[in-house]
Length: 295
Image (cartoon, rainbow, N blue to C red; front, side, top):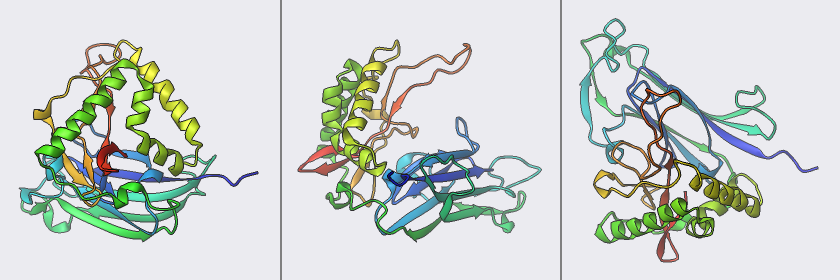
């Protein structure tokens, strides 16, 4: 009998902040906090984000107003963050923990092994209305995980990119192709365009590549056949591209932080709610001389 497969989970928490962004190896994972549409907690599988050897984990508290400014554009804001006059900024905090579980365990299992953790808490001098802080507040740590990824990912040796007009044009063409494949339920084309990512996901989670491809083929066909299948037209004016992964990946996001590729609006169950959209997160790197989807 083969040994249980390990899976790595980021256990994330942020409260008392408007938006806190969590990063692994210079790649954003998710935004949490008390801002609109967010939540305080999340457990995110992260095998595919980890690399052999040293891994960086980062918390960005009160990240910038749009993705490309998440880590930059230092600014000052008077406490309180949340506007709760009775509490001020006191109690605002964020935490990030990387835990290794084995197949068959559930998140939170006491047998999980904590590999790294870091936290941020509002400093005492920010109490009440009298204090102010510079934002974003950034804390990070490093942890050596050994040969956790089973070798380097291809994106790690990809050339660093420049967000210029030629790159934007090439990326637009790639996104148009991926979007068209999703809309048409063309699983074969989708799998071709996203082959590096699919191979990495299969390797990261120790699944046969054929099984992962079969799963994606089914999902693409089924999603396209639903009443709200397909992808909305591209709107480059709404994009806010940013380079991540040491400048080797371009993160395909809009200024609102959502993925560029998104499905048509869907009504919330029960009616009366705000419509939501399915999103298709993509990050591309230049492999073999052309942009390819790698994450």
